[in-house]
Length: 139
Picture 1 (cartoon, rainbow, N blue to C red):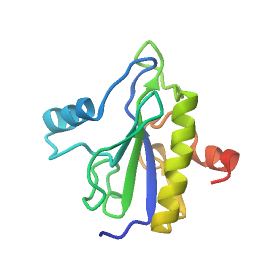
Picture 2 (picture 1 turned 135 degrees about the vertical axis):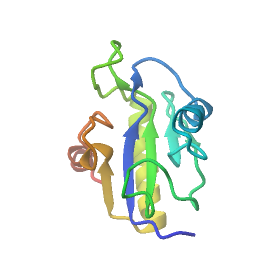
Picture 3 (picture 1 turned 45 degrees about the vertical axis):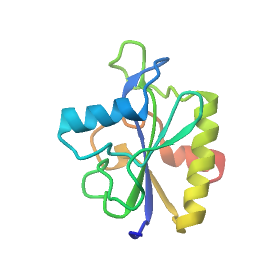
């Protein structure tokens, strides 16, 4: 297994209220970007179910310069209905699943660093402040 020292949280940058699957995102990443697979290791659907994306033993393709030792976790959503305005569209189920998943990954891998994509790129992703969220939920 590769060394993991960080979890980086993302959104799919899709409009609120719309469902997308791992296969949808995989298609966007493979066909649209020419990547070998989906860039994220986990995708959280609107119903709170957590789905495996890229295998954990493989380096992700989600945050330039930080992929080698991180796990990419993404939730479906992140944009308002206008498909332009960043918005925290996490459902209550997604919020609960994100807490559970991040806590579990931190425990399994001994990770202490959890970041939002926007901390490394000029993007709104994941459309919420990850550090404020960590403080709020005690992670």
